[in-house]
Length: 348
Ligand SMILES: [Zn+2]
Image (cartoon, rainbow, N blue to C red; front, side, top):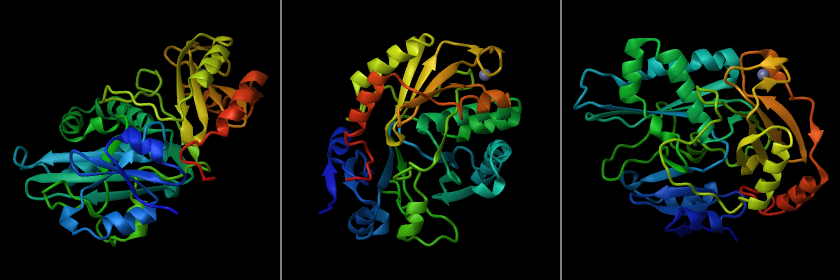
């Protein structure tokens, strides 16, 4: 029997979540709600008067999510700035990169607005067919690359970006206001022009898909070539599924190839990234200036060596096909590990 569970801490929410449920937050300071999407819609969102709906999506740590952008213009301070002009500049730079890497028809954009006379406020969501960013840190790294390589060389764009693009939203367990919700006490509903406020559209506008197992993962490195990092909030919170024993084995394995500089886990797609101190690239047949190699560990107990460099086709494609089995001891621990409840699990 499914139900809506309310908790006071995110940790408690993680601990009681089983199966295909999402974690939402309500109010400021917030309480957390664990529920299946439809149940949340029917029991929490639906019954409330629109101006009292103050609900957020928890963009969970280390779970795949879509690309999203938060634009805020304080119209009291900057009455001459139109937030839609800011959007056109920002989206222009982002789309120049997206359309270069993906088919244009596979990229969709949803622009939600919750502006009033004091504040210009837009949330932009990009979805790429069959693809999803590995987690919010990778979305942040993508945005920081756009800023550094596309925007910063153009002084007027750089100024506008720095003032009105909120780069702090790419942090751990970020709360993001959902369609049909307002800031507390402001009666400023988040809406999409020409889009009815119903369950399907509300679901469509969420940043984090409930299950992304069939999607291909987009990973992005930071502008300096280092692995994607969460920014903005110092507090580290690891969900239950975090396994120190698995981590130790994978670091040992990584060290047998090259010195390990970090490890990332993406629980919902059951994959690991082992970042290496190795610039000598097996695909380029040479040494990179900044970019390093990493080991991608797949849920079926295989791995491949990959390169963070996106410049050369050989680096981008290197390792995509040629997967090798992990040592037996790690495969064994992994299969045990995979029998744990991994959130979200479709078996519960
Ligand atoms: Zn390379």
